[in-house]
Length: 63
Image (cartoon, rainbow, N blue to C red; front, side):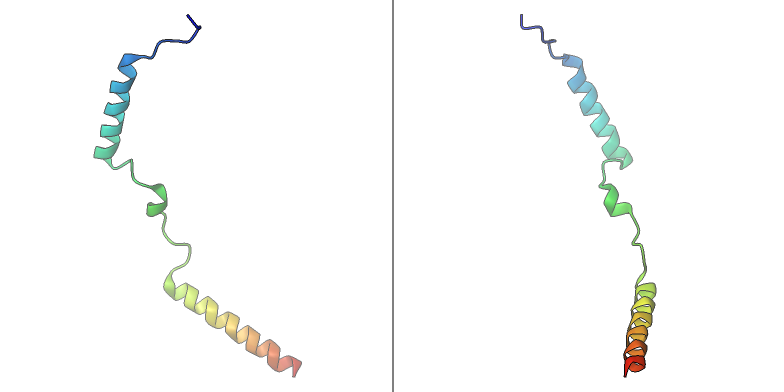
């Protein structure tokens, strides 16, 4: 004997049952697909307009 533990034959069945339960409950989905976006389209547009206005104003002040 090399000192290694023999594989637990019941563990594979338990793992299969856990995977099956997770699939039924929807827990096996990718978590990133459930995260909402940080900013919505409207907020991103407003931020872009404000940034553009700040750039234009800073250019006009330098002239």
